[in-house]
Length: 335
Figure 1 (cartoon, rainbow, N blue to C red):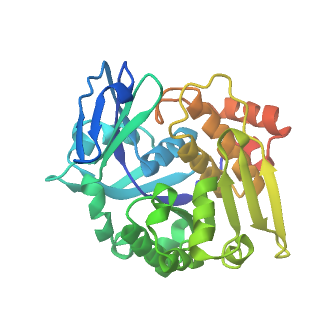
Figure 2 (tube, rainbow, N blue to C red):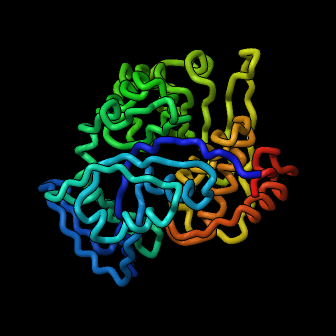
């Protein structure tokens, strides 16, 4: 059966990840004088890898691989978005449309990550053009909002996420609130405002806990305005708290999909979100959509890098059946 593809909007960071390996221990390469507040460190790396990344970019990649729903990727990037191949990398997917603001006088957001032999990490993040996301105007950019089934408002600057939440509400496009690593930067009121506007709240256990602490809301109070809270738990799977059709609360623990070989967990959470959005676009229920998210995340973990893995629909279906005993009808009927 061939379905009519639904349309979603992906909002969030688009970035390059520079990965370096340091063949020694950081602790042996650092000199710190706490009294004089002096610091000296020299890191000589023996390996460098440049990868496509950013939450929104990773989500778009997985949705592109599945090719079940259409996605519009909106963000702010530098000239290097084209020069270093990120744009062409995503445009190989016929179901991905890119509508980004390109700032020729700035660079695309960049994350520099150095790993030592003890797997300690040194991370430097440069926002670059991502800081201009605050200027994005969805009202002008989306003349036909009724054609969009869902959006995801994922981590970038707090102010940009606040503005986008207001605009999505004006456009009457339901969205997933995914504050990610910037969760601690929100004020209590800004968190409450976005939660009141969103349809689903998602985050890992630390992010969800931070949301509860900052807002002083219970999960049940959050569900007064949202249909679900999804807490990702890494190798333990995820927890789904949602309301059924009778407005009754239901909490389900969903085990993680079995992994053949664990190579790199980078981007697994973003792959989960790509699977979740795809499931929702197929009208799968919340539980089945979370299971699909877990399936897609498993393929990411089996390769190095967040945007290097392949996907085959038949393998996705088989892995779904092997892990969750059935294949949802909405997924089964796809050619």
